[in-house]
Image (cartoon, rainbow, N blue to C red; front, side, top):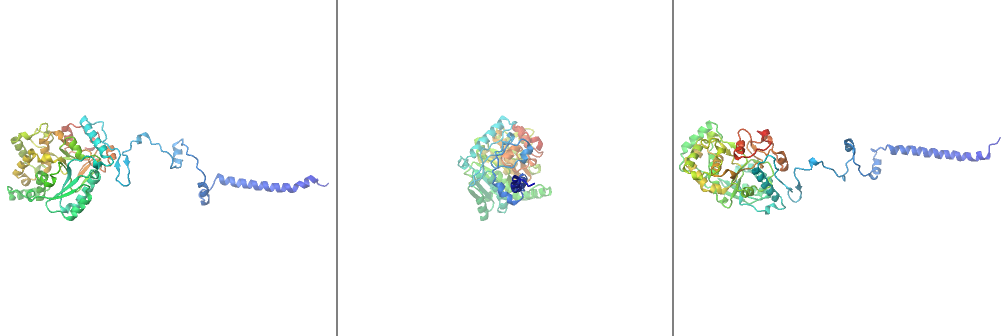
Amino acid sequence: MKPSIFYSSRQPYLKYLAIILTTITIYVLTHSSYLADPNINDVTTKPILETVPQPPPQSPSSPEQQQQQPANQDQIVKVPEELKNKPQDLVVDNNKDQKPAVSGVPKSSSSSPQQQEKQDTKKELENSSSSKDPVKSEKVKATFVTLARNSELYDLIKSIRNVEDRFNRKFNYDWVFLNDDDFTQEFKDLTTALVSGKTKYGKIPKEHWSYPDWIDLKRAEETRKNMKLQKIIYGDSESYRHMCRFESGFFWRHPLLDDYDWYWRVEPSIDIHCDLNYDLFKYMEDNNKVYGFTISIHEFRATIPTLWDTTKKFIKENPQYLAENNFMDFISDDKGETYNLCHFWSNFEIANLNFWRGEAYRKYFDYLDQTGGFFYERWGDAPIHSIAAALFLPKDKIHYFDDVGYKHSVYTQCPLNPQFRYEHKCHCNPDNDFTFRGYSCGKKYFEKMGLQKPKEWEKYQ
């Protein structure tokens, strides 16, 4: 029987249709597999993938999804509330130094009204100093003062750069340099290059750096020999004694200081740990302060065996100079009978020159000088300045700078509040703070001044 015409005519078409369907099936299967699991490490796929528009980011629903979600530059990051109070906001100007936009002294919940008032005053000064051009704000008649020799230049310029970076580049105060010899041109050139204000260089008159006529030189020599045997620090040094006498009674008489009311003493090899965003001189003047310090310490008794007895004789002969509400109980534990050796460390001091120029201190220094104690013993300028400030000033004229962060030799003053250190970019370790250590007089100062200690103080005593 012959096949039907219909069947025979369709057979070639069915064969072609089967081939086409098979080809389509193979194509779909192979290409759908590629798209489902592309090889992203194949460099030929990268241009294709990069041209594909990315879907908008969706909020992850879990911490795991947050970590897996790719970063997007246009994504808005929500900062947790506890992190919104950042340590310091900065106004960044590529042509200028970075300056705090809003600076302030953190308010401690444990502050007394007196301390809070001081903090508020500093905050006002900081805010005014953080203006676009703080140099144009009203300055006081003030200068830095440094007693240094040419050989100390490279230790000194570290101190200068430190003070300039932390403070004076904002305020441009002058700097007076004093020496018992002529300054070298290198000394002048290098220090002038570093100081933002005017620099002035003076030579100390010979009579201010030599033995007075009434000094028995042989007795002075015997003192130095004996102190050397006793291993008393600087006990055998002549130059140290001349320095102490000069800093006690003559630096403020130098003609280069006649144009100023205030000074800040800076020595070689010191460090300022924190940014100072307010004018410390102006703070002292506006708040009617006279003497400011950072570190208090006990003196070596062997260096001043007769200083207090000599002081008591002066007070007995000149009772009119003893100030009301003075700070006697800081330097004496028995109402003036004996000296407890507490004093302000004078290698850092910000003070009013007119106090030293006044009648009470002039007569006190002359009285001490006539006894020869600078040479027959080893009287230092620090206890002499401190005793004078404690006796001849009301105690509210004395100010402790707890915010400077200062280091000289082995002793450091470091702000204890961590938030303050963050805000003021302090680089000191609070574990090294000396304020409340045993040999310091910091605890006594706070107690006798009626101030509340920082809440962190017990951790650092």
